[in-house]
Image 1 (cartoon, rainbow, N blue to C red):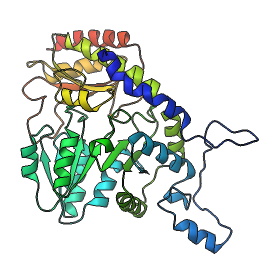
Image 2 (image 1 turned 120 degrees about the vertical axis):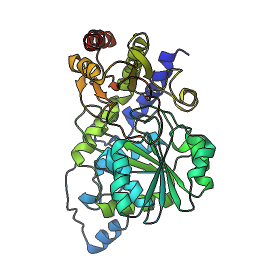
Image 3 (image 1 turned 180 degrees about the horizontal axis):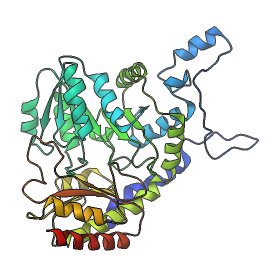
Image 4 (image 1 turned 60 degrees about the vertical axis):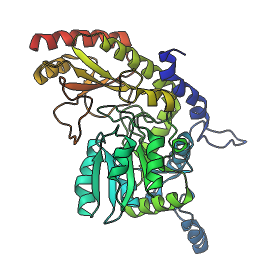
Length: 404
C-alpha cells in the first residue's frame, strides 16, 4: 500500500457509517433525510408521574430538560460513541471543556495527575490554575518517555495518566497501549485527547478509559462551531462523567450539535482529500533547504512514526515544520505574513488552510523535537489544490530568505 493510501484509508472507510447513522426513523408519510433541530429549555409532561420517570433517565440520552441536552445532542452523542468505539458520549461546550470536564469528574483534592509535556496549552493552564487551587498536583512527563520513566513518576495518589497523541505542536505519537497498561497496573485511568485521531485511532481497543474530542475540528469541519465530546466505555465511568457534566452545566447548543452532525456527513471525504494533500505538502517541504525537519507522523523521521503505522488507520491534516538553525524568528514571521492562501489563526480541522507559529510561546519542561534548531510553525491543510499551496509556500520562502 502506498503512503498516500495509508494516510487516507481510515477516512474513506468511515464514509458509509457517517452517511447513514443518526438519521430519522422512516415514516409511512415520508421522512426528512436530516434530523430536525429542536431548541428548547422547558419540557412539559402529561403528569407528575411521567415527569418523575423521565427525570430518572439521565443516563439514557433522553430529553429531560434543555440544559441536560436536546434530541439532536443525544443523537450526535450516539454517533460519536459509535465512531470512537465506546458505550456513551457526553457533549460539552468546547474542546477545552472536553479536557477539563473529565479531569474535574475523576480527580479529587489530594490526587495526582500525570500529563505529557506536549499537552494542549490550555489544558496545561487549567492544571496549573484550577486543579492546583483545588488541591490536585500535576507532573509533566516527556511524551515519548520510556515505560520505566513513566512508572517512576507514579505516586500512590496518581489517579489519571493523561495523554495526547500526537501532540498538537510537536506531533509526538505516544504508545497508548503501553501507557494504558502502566496506568491500569497502578489503579489509574488513562485519558486521551484523541482530537487528531478521531475516526482513525480506536481509543478503547488500545486501552483508553476516557477519550476526548474537540468537535470544533474535523467533525464540524467548517470553522463555525465550538463544541467538544467525552466518550467512555463502561457504565461506571459513564455515570461519573454524566453526573459531573450535569452538575457543571455542560452541554452543547442545539445549533452547534446540528451543524456538527451535518459536518460529520462529509468528514470522511473531506479528510481523505485533506490527508492526501497534507502528505503531499509535507513531502514537498522535506525538499526545501530551509527546512530542518517536518513533523508529520506518516513520515519516517517523525517521533513515534512506527507507533503511527501500528495503531492508526490514517493521518490528519495538521503537521509541524522546524526550520534550519540560523533562521531567525523575524524571518519566519515575514514568511508567514507573506502567505496568501494560508490564514493566520488558531484551531484547525476546517476546510481552509491555516498557519500558526509554534516557537517562542510553548511551555515545555523537557527537551523536544524542536529544540536545537530554528524557529517552527504548523500547517493545517485544507481543501485547496495542494499545488497552489506549495506555490504559495515557495513564494513565502523567498520572503523568508530576504530576511535571513
